[in-house]
Image 1 (cartoon, rainbow, N blue to C red):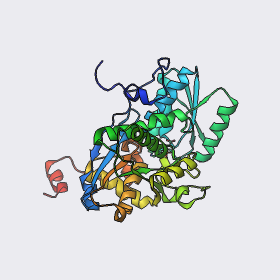
Image 2: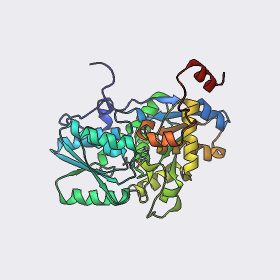
Image 3: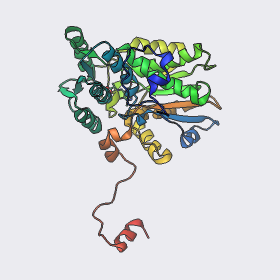
Image 4: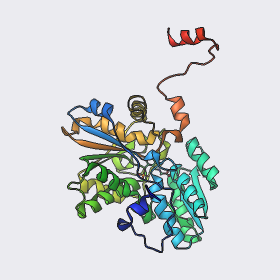
Length: 352
Ligand code: F0G
């Protein structure tokens, strides 16, 4: 078979797999790095901006990168059941890969705070979905205990294989650009992905595959920004439910990434997230989910700090179709309804 074989086959020598690892794959990875000229124009200074559109993975988010690794290694170890806590995307990816591997998947989600598409996916893939009356942080602490006391494999990003898989997104960026970008802008929730990207850039740098390392610019939603405020948040709130997290599991790692890369954490408001979300769709033709737009909202927020001629990559972590409710509620246009089915009425509605 020719063509893309999935990220484990492609980056095998950089990953902790062997001939004995049964590769569970949906041919994830190889997502496009799309130029974003309208966004670059908003910044000026002759910068170049790209978006790494990881919403084009098989289940619609970057989580597939981590899950192909986590589930393959779980299968290698003989696991039969996986478990995770999730704001939605992890549960969709865990469900898809676990079922493909013939395993059962249990997913704990915060009741009422998971976008419709994600819930639909987990249910159809055949996960056992347990909605708890608590937030993500609460769900995560429960599944960590479950994995300690019962024969279930935890596939949240505290599972080290998750980060190993996710670091391949950095490889793909360097493989296309020929070097690391000057800035990497990325939404931050549980802080696994920013940690994974940095691992990827550093590994490639050590191997001489890139000359420079990027500044890692992490963005959190203002109502869920513990890495900005420096203290855990008991009741995180944001319309970007994917990153509605108050006590990130990879807190220390993310802080180390910030320091090592001379990066920053900043907060963006829900209104700023929605503006970036609409801009990406209406100016660039790219539909991402609200949490993903935090990277773009963040870049616009700190644009005065961007050096001239900088090359910037914004990570778009999830597909816009994940959250149709937000798109309809906060879209660019109201659609016109109840139009009489005649040419005259349509012409009139079009303003002719
Ligand atoms: N963007 C999206 C679309 C996400 O789903 C997540 C995390 C993030 C960004 C943040 O990544 O946690 O590695 O800092 N979603 C997790 C989930 C929490 O359960 O799907 P992070």
